[in-house]
Image 1 (spheres, rainbow, N blue to C red):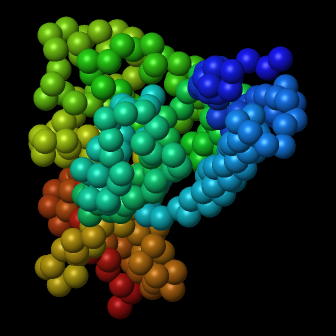
Image 2 (spheres, rainbow, N blue to C red):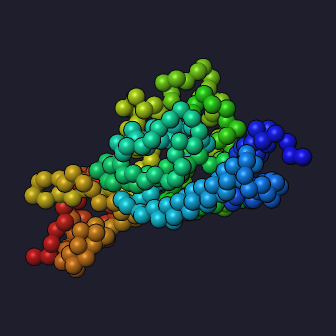
Image 3 (cartoon, rainbow, N blue to C red):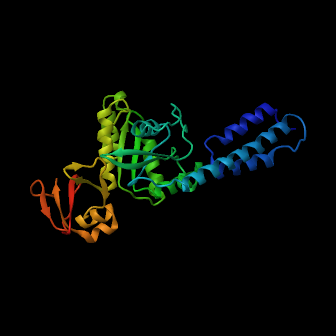
Length: 311
């Protein structure tokens, strides 16, 4: 004699807590095999509900997989925002990019990767919020394998963690990233600093001693600017501004470290490379303002360059 259907339903929902993706589908199939095969009545309704949950779980997994491999790269670099559920990633992405994102004070508000562009020192950088990674993500729990695939394609990682929250969840996320064999330049954003309790930041630093920590609050514009510059440093790129007839362009070129004046010219237009004799440079790489340099001069982050053509 089967147990009362209300009790059975409560037990089924309890068995599904924390299970997502293929793990949830397997559990639902097991439940289905255990249920009486009644065609009518409450148990028939339960079987119908379980079938619906299987289809929903499959559809959700397909969405996560499609979006994870379909995040089109834009901008000079791609930086992934990673952290446990409800760590402030969505709020931070919104504050940095002004993209409209669903935000809530509960876990799993974001269910798939969310890309957005932010401008740092004039250069567009793509930020991608990765949904909250949970324990077992590297074994595909919660669609984790596909999400980690997005992370694997990024140039750098910005870990996010609420300053007052216990550090266990952050440590679990980092363990999943390590288990997936992903190593990228990284830093830690201590979020919600406007609500920080005494000693919370020190404790968070102690939990991740190998990561540079940036204190940030979405209501503190100065802290957001500091974070943006820290994100730029993660990319490893340099910004070079072009000068034409004493006017400096607002949007710089993004180049790899070690780039030369010739590389700057190629970035402007490939045909220009053979037509230059050097440049005038203002900034960190120049010994004095407006120094005339050759084609092989190495530029640095923040330089202003005026290309000199062959006579």
